[in-house]
Length: 474
Image 1: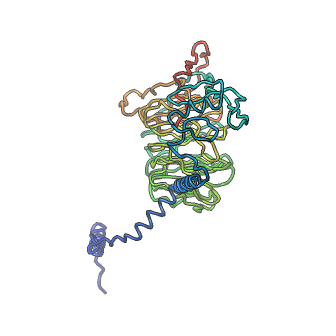
Image 2 (image 1 turned 30 degrees about the vertical axis):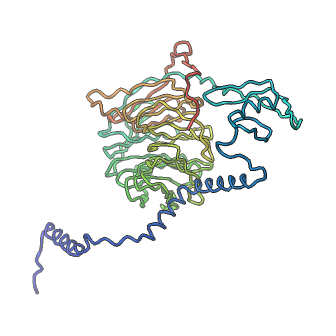
Image 3 (image 1 turned 90 degrees about the horizontal axis):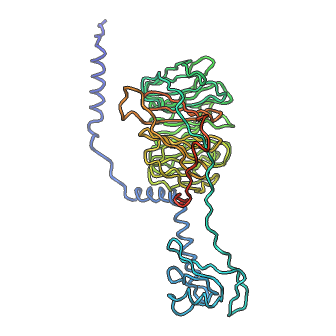
C-alpha cells in the first residue's frame, strides 16, 4: 500500500489556483459579441420604466395641440396667443392685444408689472361691450409668507467616547432608556440615555456597521454593514438569532415597518430588499435605482417604503406589489438621507443642492429648504417641527419645518486631538421625547444636544424678514 504524500496547505492552494487559471485563461479576453438588437430593446425598456410618465405627458400634450388646431376658429397656440384677458376674438395686432382687451372690457383696472410678468387686475363685475355677458375678474392676491414659529436654540450637553472608528449609525430604543450606535470598529455599543454610560458591546460584524433599528414589538435589534450582512440580535440573550442573506454588496440603511413584521434594507447593489422578519425570506427586491440606495424609511400608510439614492432620485414604493409607484427627479445631486415627519403626512429628502419637502402619498413637492451648502449626510425631525441637518464638513443647521426658516447653525466641535477633516456628521436622531438630539460623528464620538432652557424670544428673537426669504420653487 502506497503512502499518500502529504503536502502543505500552501502547496495545495497553489495547485488549486493553477488549475483554475488553466481552466479559464483561454476565455480570458474572449468577450461575447454585442447584440445590437438586444441592446436597443434593453434601452427602450429602461427608458419606458424610468420616463414612462414623461412620454405619456408629451404625447397627450401633442394630441391636445392637434385638437386645438383642428377646432373651428383655430385657437391660437404657444407664443402667438395674446397676453391678455379677451372675449375670444383676436384683435389684429398681437402686440397691442393687452391695450385692446382693456378697452374692450371697459374695466377700471390697471396693468401691473411684477417680477417681469404682465397681469391685468380689474374690478369685479366688469362687462364686455361685444356680448354683454358678465365677466368677473378676481384680483390677484399677494402670496402670504407665514411667520416662523419660535424655537429655542440647542446647545451641546454631553460628549460620549468609546468607539475606535467613525460612528456611522444610531437607533433609539422605543422605551427611551437606551440607544445603540454602530461604527467603523465593527462593534455595536448600547449606551444608557440618561447617564451616557456604556451598557453593552456586541461583536459579530466583520466590517463597518452602517445601519441599526430597534423593534418596538419584540426584544430585537437589527443591524447591517459593509460586510453585506443583515443580522437580528435577541437582546434577551445578546446573541445573533437570524441572518438575512441576499444583498450583493454593502448594506447602508435599514428600517422596520411599524405595524407588520417586515424589515427593509438597502445598499450599494442599487436595490432595496423587503424581508420577512421571522422566516428570513426575501419578500421583494425593489429594483429601479441605478446607483447606491443610501436611505430607506418605512411607514404604516402609503407609500409604505420610500428610498433615496445616489442616482439623484427618490422613489415611492407599493409594498404589496413590490413596485415603484412614483419617481421624484427634482434633485440634481445624490440623495443621502430621507426623514419622515413624526406627526405630519410628509417627508424630507437631503441632497447637496437642497433639502426638499414632499407631501404623501403622491410625493407632491412642497418647498425647498436652501442654505446648507455641504454634502448633507443625515437629518432628524421632532414633533415640535425642528428639522436638523448634518453635513460632511461638521456643520449643523436647525430649521423650522413649516417655513424652512434657519434659526440656528454652528460647526460641531471636534474631539481634542482630532484632525480638522474628522468633523463629519454621519447620523443623527432625536430621542423619543424629541428633547435630546444624538449625533454620530467622524471624530469617533457621540454628542448629545439639548435645548437651551435659559433662552427666550427676547434673548433669541426670530430674525424674520419676509422680503428676503426665498420662496417655494423647484
